[in-house]
Amino acid sequence: MITIESGKIHRQYIKDLWNYRELFWLLSWRDILVRYKQTVIGIAWSVLRPLLTMIVFTIVFGKLAKMPSEGMPYSILVFSAMLPWQFFSNTLSEGGNSLLSNEKLISKVYFPRIIIPTTSMIVSLIDFLISFALLLILMIVTGFLPSWTIVFMPIFLIEAIVFSLGLTFFISAMNVKYRDFRYVLPFIIQFGLYISPVGFSSSIVPEKWRIFYYLNPMAGIIDSFRWCISGFTYNIYITGCIVSFFVIIIFFIIGILYFRSAEREFADII
Image 1 (cartoon, one colour):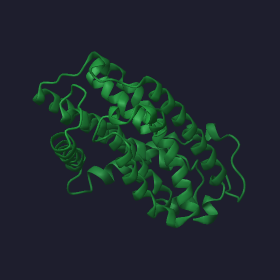
Image 2 (image 1 turned 90 degrees about the horizontal axis):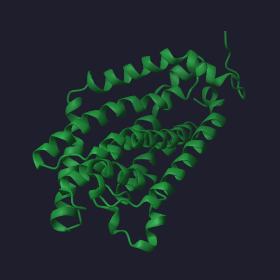
Image 3 (image 1 turned 30 degrees about the vertical axis):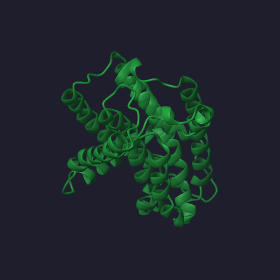
């Protein structure tokens, strides 16, 4: 029997993660049921939200502001960015509050706490697949077929997963220690939407500022997704994407280290 004691962490953490793998899938399946089975709109919301956002951004940025579309239909430009953005925002919003939502479980039994915010990624991944299917339909309708470079999309999806989880680990741990931090989370997600190239192409950013713009990891991820879909039609800024990649790694390491350092106190604080 493992006893939870303040200030102590089980040394064989990686082994614990493997031993509790069934708990991970159980919690993931629970979240899936809550999201899709016990709600009225369920899957429909996974379709309507990116679709409505795409329509609004296409009208505002494509029709009214006349932003460049990099040789792509503007609806495809926006929707290809909605894929990684929706995955990121869903993972962060659900995972950021996941520890507080499971406080009774955390206070009663031992298991690696990092499992809880990680399960939010599974539900977001299902939303991603639904949206990806919708994108393929949209591309058929517009007559803009994907390039062969779409085979590289899983690589950049992994990149989005790493960034999303790193930030989720950090914010979920912060939410436990500082309860009012959960009210900041929606603002972070909304602000991130505005500064990320979701409704527009990153090519509109002035050349002298572009390298700094890619310190926002979502800029590199979104550009990579657009490149996968349109191929060499989309002018990708390789240097900026490399910068984003290293920022993602830094966020992931910081997120895990902070979560592990704060984890020992979760049971006592909650």
